[in-house]
Length: 118
Length: 118
DNA sequence: CCAATTGTTCAATAACTTTTGAACTAAGGA
DNA sequence: TCCTTAGTTCAAAAGTTATTGAACAATTGG
Image (cartoon, rainbow over all chains, first blue to last red; front, side, top):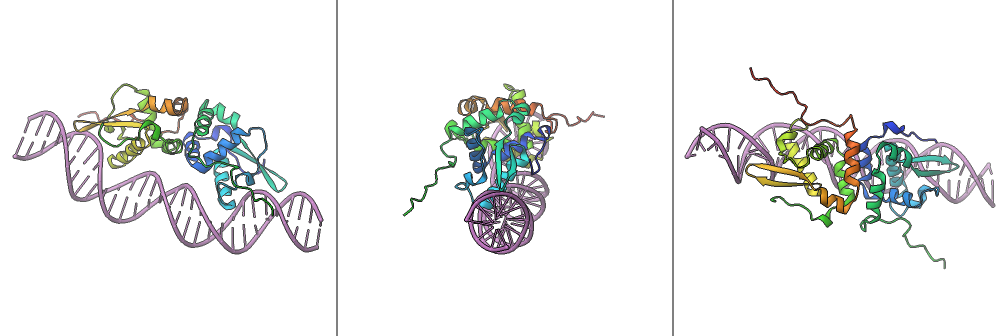
């Protein structure tokens, strides 16, 4: 761990809800949930926002206690704080993710067209 | 019904989360959940905010599809749209309310001292 | 009809949040 | 060492949300 994270009991319900109430961040969380276990770095999310803006949104998620970011070399490994969230707010994350999964309007991660090399 | 409400399938997850991510509104929802069935008018919430500001927050809840407001005489009857929310986002409302119930930092409704008449 | 009660609307301001680009740091590979 | 990759920080600009007070509307009771 490297950057500042709240402890489990510092996690605040209204802040978590507000942080999840943004389509970009909700997409990130949905994607992390889908790929749970797979370590994720920021660049995965570059089709959602610019690098700078991503850094901002990922910091919001981290500061709210929704995700954990650890520095590994020049990357960050981003994971969902599922156990802490489940302990603090039982059922919340699951229902949010289930609802987000069915949301056609949320921006998708990993959908950006890949350049076919000439 | 009198004021504009979204239909059940117009209710958007990020908007609902953002709307619930405000302590004043979360308190209102928690109180409505506690007193479910009991018709509620705006003045119940006057210890949370000014009359004007309450009107604003209650409109946000209504526009997001979280509550329903019907005009009855000079009052509004405010209710939670529990069935619509449960259908759209199963488990979400319950987990939010359960978490809000355990939140000591949320402002309480119905706590303002009542004047003892001289 | 008049006054009180209940709530809305409007315009202004204050307070935040999001987005941006340029400059920066730190690690790793050639 | 130098270059690249990965991400942060900073300050500015843009956009949004919250709060306020004054004025308004609608209903009800006297």
